[in-house]
Image (tube, rainbow, N blue to C red):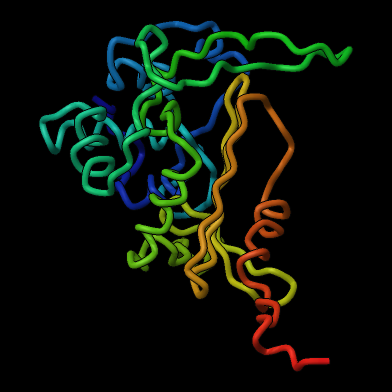
Length: 248
């Protein structure tokens, strides 16, 4: 489904954004609400273009690379991405809210999406059709289930190991997850995303075993600073109990 390029591309390179596949462009047809019959059909947006760089030599963030990973999963398993999401992730982890954001489906408790105009008015956001990118975006979930998913990944240390370029340089990205250190030395992993009318962010403190998930159904400007501030509520020393306070 993906033509041979100037060099072979591996799934691990796709996971670490090292494969040389480009990201979105303004002229891409994805913003017109076009429906694609499959993830494989959605590859037509970028499949015939040359790579940005030789695989493994440069970091270049690419949602399209994750679209290609979805097609790899479907080919390897003989099942749709939706079936893999349900059978390999949602059901084993008990993530009852996780499902694809199918525009025409009746999905209980699905939030409407909103956007704010330049003059501050709030209106319905333009419809999203994620049929070309199920494996890079377009998944619905509650904030609780995003946090549960992130917590379940903590034992998988390779997910959070910085990838290495061909020249030996380490990236600050593992297999999808961004890796950072707070000013006080606290190590954390994170990732965020946006769609028309929505914003999501997830952050994990591995040593403390804390995961924070933030979701909005309107585009809002929040990032790791806000997620770290929330996480601090669970890392600060607990106040002394009443029993420990000496009588006066």
